[in-house]
Each structure stands twice: as C-alpha cells, then as structure tokens.
Image (cartoon, rainbow, N blue to C red):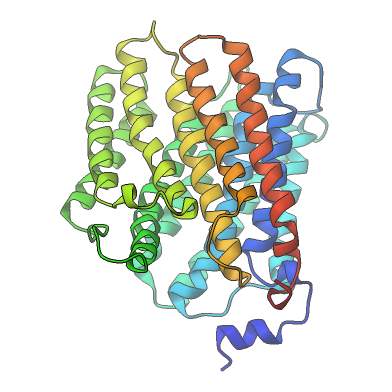
Length: 396
C-alpha cells in the first residue's frame, strides 16, 4: 500500500487537481470577490441577473452556501487524509466534486429561468456529496472522534435546504436558513480554530525562545464551546429575545477568555500567525454585538453582529487558513510576505468598516469601502496564490 506522499508523487494529472485545497481555495476566492463586486450594483438596480432570489438573498446565500462550503471542502479534503492516514481525493473524483460545486453556482445564478426548485436541487447536491466523501473517509479511517466535523457539514446542508425553502415562499427572506449557516460557520471556527490557532501559535513560539505558550485544551475550552453552542442555538431560534442577549454576553466572555489563553500578544512578529488570533477575536465580538443589537436596537442594527461573524470571523479565518495551507502544502516558507499582509489588511478593513456601517454612520461610503476591501482581499489572494495552486509542488 503506497503512502500518501508516494501517491502524491506518482500523480500525473494537472497539479491543480492533486489536492483538494488547490481548486477549491482558488475558485472559492474568485467567486467570493465576484459576488461582492456586483452586490452593490445589484442592490442599486444597475445590474440585473436572472436569479429567483432577491439581491440580498443572493448575496447572503452565495457567501454562506457558495463560498464557505468551497473553502470548507478545500480544508477538509486536505486535513482528513492527515487525520485518517488514508489517501487524498485527487484527479477525476476531485474534478467531479468541483464540477458539482460549479453547477450549484450556475444553477442559482440562472434560477429564475430554470426554476427555484431545480436550482435548489442542484445547489444542495454539493454539500450532500461533500458530506458523503468526508463521512466515508472518517469512518473507513476509524477516526470517529472527527465525526463532529461531519455533523457540522450536515448542519450546513440543512441550513442550505431551509434557505432555499424560505426563499421560495411569497414573502420569504433570509431567516432561519441564514442564521443556521452563520451559526454553523461560527461553530466550525470555534471547533477547528480551537485546534489550529493554539497549535500553530505554539509551533511558531517554540522557535522564538522562552516565553508564554498557549494553554493546552482544557475545561475552559469545553465551557466556551458549550456556551457558544447554546447561545447560537437560541439566537437561531429567537434572534431578538432578551435571553438571547444574556447568553450572547456569556458566549462573548467565554470566547474572549479562551482567546486570551493562546498567547496571541507574542505573535506580532509573524502576521501569518497573528491573523489567526485577530480572526478568532471576531467570534466574541460578534456575540457582544448580538447582545448590543438586542438591548440597544436604536444604536446598532443587527447586521453589525452578523458581519462581525461573517466578514470578520469567517472572512479573516478562511483567508488565514487558505494562505497558510497553500504555502505549507506547496513547499513554501510559512511566513507572510508583503502582498499577503496587504490581503489581511484589506480583509480587516472590510470587516471593520462593515461593522461601523451598522451604527448608521456614513453608511453608504462605509458599505462601499467594505465591499472594496473584501474584493481586494479575495481577488488579491487569487492573483498572489494562483501560481502556487496551479503548479506542481516541486515548481514552488
């Protein structure tokens, strides 16, 4: 039986299909930039697309259930072989999965012509296929402790189905489907981020000499994740209740304490590590803003909390993982070059300006600045990382 490394060395197909992160990170980033680039023109009526969704529904759906699943697929198809010791999905099977994702994006894009039910059926097929692939690898690899990741992928699939069903209603709109997607994404960050942030931080700090290291996984981590699960579940069902605000405050406190134990203050010298801490910081910020939007609705719109989680936690964390994994798996040094640092700054600008816009201060200029920052970050990733992702490892 060949090892994973031997299997990769013997692969003779296109380099971009040699590992899951390559096509999904690249096309996911391109799609993310395109979706936001045409979002404001769609909202103003300057651009019209044959979609069955409203412009707001399409914007939300394509970032939550288009972009995010692509990046999750790239990460999981790369990580699961390391977890299970099984061979990675490469070549034609990987291409088939990629084509299913592309078909979903096209189906939603022309959903007004083919019909919303047909578009929904095509779109949800990707997450269903990904769940089957990941589930098979985890079970056959006797790696059942990672079934919780599979459960989150399944929850994302449920959210997508609910989103489509809501959008088909005469007076539908982003509701439970949107909140299920956001809550699942935040849980993915707290579960997977809870592994990689302290782990990568420890690996880097050990080389820097004596000093504080991230605390090992312990009871506080369990309490923080549990508090997040309860808070997000209640928020999904009852987004405006006072009990939700109280639970959100508890979630903010616990995740802030969790983050403080990971020695992020010592990572300023390496932006590739620092960005992981900044991205995770948007998790407790999101919880805090949920509480604020419920208790002081005249001060801040709920979109501030939503974008702390989406533009902040999801946007920055996915970019942090994409940039690091792409460097590591293509044989490049694990350090953030100037272009990579600019990508991080653009994404941070997008998140901060979008949150401030929720306070109804210079709303339209800030929305435009946020969109520009997002497009610059993800288009920048595609430009900078295209050569790494499209060429064989030995060429980099």
